[in-house]
Image (tube, rainbow, N blue to C red; front, side, top):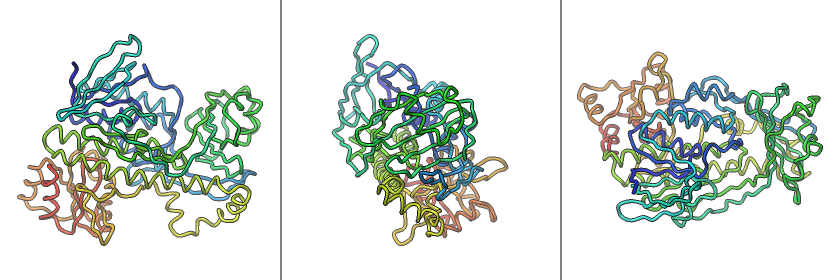
Length: 502
């Protein structure tokens, strides 16, 4: 029987990210994927700079830049293609060192994720392998698998299992978890087109408010374009496989480009849902990505949430397996990630409803209100700022109860040393960011716990960041999240690393 510390079920972006992060800590992983190769059709097409930062952590900074393109933000359009409102995002390097939003083709992303994974001998990826059952005991998990080409069955033994197996997750069923409906279900037509022609459109996301045919347009690559249109009751994707019916939907953007120059890559129906698993863990088995949550696509956070799951859990699991963290820290994964995922699902649901609901009356309201949205306090920031909510309070997020503070949020990936940024210096370790000059004994104590000291010098971005949080020192976890922020360096700041197992 094969035995391995971690089995990952599913080789999508979430599973590949989790495996790479674990491999960087030297943890041996086996990825089991039912398909032989990458699913060839694009699904996710957008990510934010927080998740771009995760890809850089995997070693894919240049590779992802080569296959992606920054997008300018969001435009709300009426049925006559008039711009009702525009919310721009920064395409330059922001607080995380990357554009606030990027468009990409998912098969290309999975290709570079798989290629990058080959650098790590600790990871084995097996395709054509279907997981058919999980059985836990006190010491580990038995994973029953079937080779889909030969029908041969075998068992694999793992200390922990990560279920990254999508919306129809067997892992979720195996632990008895169920999806909770958060009150959003819409059927949409998804169209992917390739063309060498230049559509001449604004390089951002176009949201069309046109009842009953709400729609979305975006350029996702040099020659790739995506449209999504809400389906009318009784319609299916089959009604639009004929270009004669499909072309009128997209012609508002394609204009005079001949139909012969538009290659339809895919026409498919998707049901956009807002759902959250009632529990994300059963002892040694964890749910990540779509197995744990489904997010409507209106804010481009579906795949992003899965990569955030992997980033949150990988360092904790590596610490437990390596003996530097107590097993109890694994309980913080669901506490932190579930509330964050719920907040992003609710935001996506709100945006989707605001853009598509209400029929003709809703359309009239949008036409009247949208041009004035920029004067609504906080709303422009919500639409243009890529920052997501801080993590929920846990044993690894020590947040004050009477003020927000820095804990639970991400430390900026600021330039700290020449052209090196925070992540380049921290390299997946605990870090103490401080504007206080430590003593020699304090430096030694920090180093003894395997942490790195990063000075926040006056006038620097990190110094300003600490000031905004009314802090002079912060403990930053290996995933970039602030564990604790304080006005003094000792004793509580360094103690936070010690008690966390660092």
